[in-house]
Length: 255
Image (tube, rainbow, N blue to C red):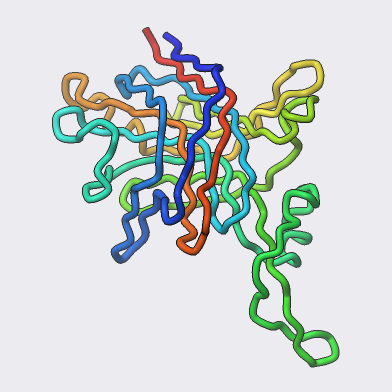
């Protein structure tokens, strides 16, 4: 069973919106979502989204949000920021600040235009002459995944080539999260989907997340999963909202 939506739509995220959980007490869950698809957790097979934005502010983000919840004890979306879900996964693109030196040495595959946004100078560092000079920081859209069971774990990966041959497609990213299994058990894998000029797809693995299906058989169809496109602009000093443009949103559920 497929829930496919190829009609373009936009999510607008105001400043100070985010989904993030970090000890000892940070627990923010106020980012806007749209077009949520809900089904039994045990029936989830995959979700895919294609999107882009003019990333500008620190931690600007867009992509997919997955929220597993007990049907009997957790309210469906819209979620209450005062009582945020305990478990969730978000994956997509996030503007992350790293130094230009780090970008050039660790992420050499990122094309220069993606990280040409100056932010603020970093703390000074010594030069070979013993003097100190500022090391400028850059903002770079990164492939980003956050997995939250008790607290959030965050990973970033270099953002590679654009998705497809057209000018519009070059400014879009396609992310897929899919159920998989092997002799060791079951999990979801997060992929970047890159389409070539012939339409062929390359799936670039980004992250495996194992906890999400641990309790799916607990109770009589007790666990459900909400799958939603999301956008967020955590920067509190931003003066305008972030608009994330979505071109595709597909969720596959087993019959």
